[in-house]
Image 1 (tube, rainbow, N blue to C red):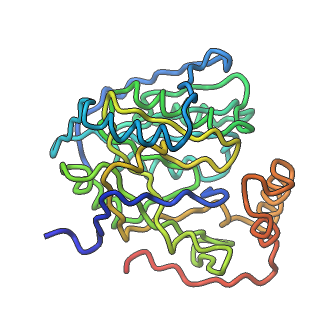
Image 2 (image 1 turned 180 degrees about the horizontal axis):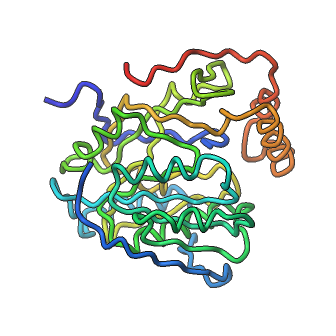
Length: 305
């Protein structure tokens, strides 16, 4: 019988995230690979086909590619893109990930602080690429660079994590059961926007990420066609072509700490969004403005159901 905390949704698509959305397994070598990458040399997939054509093509290819679905001994690799995370949550996140993933791959988006040193201090970080010039203004290129770096380490499963996210204890206990099976190729979780601390999350008409599912865990199948949409901001965590594969929506929780800091920190993020997306081309202008709400609706956080 399927775990009641999981709802199988074969063929259903995971939700794309809103702004700023924001165990033991196979052994790893624990050897660091630090790469400094000249941006002009990053190889990208061609994007000649339309989104609909690419999705259809990916679906028909799925029967021809080598689809290896192991039900045991799967290697779980976390992948992160980071920039100027010193003094925030990165160290805690990497420590937390080190407890339940096998390897970690990181692309540093030209940080100007000590972020690369923090990353390289963790033995499970087996690949760290440091970009010479930032790609934040072209996020789809950054996501693609991270994907290519991660799959070069021969993972079985990939967990896409932001540097301000913590998986609940229940999620960490369940993750090996999720990946050691042969019926689903991705899993989605419920993400909660913690607000002004870690005791409450925000819930209103503009802040309801936890009411839908966000796919962040995917099986890697060599030969399958993976691609990201060409968006400068708010690019989904996983390649869009993953969404035509069978997947599962879980009720497992993740804390998003991007809004858990001080009011000053939220004001800085508000100003950044207004600067990079002044007309709401990539996000919701009303949601940007709501960042400064003096009395947002907050609900108490409960890690376990």
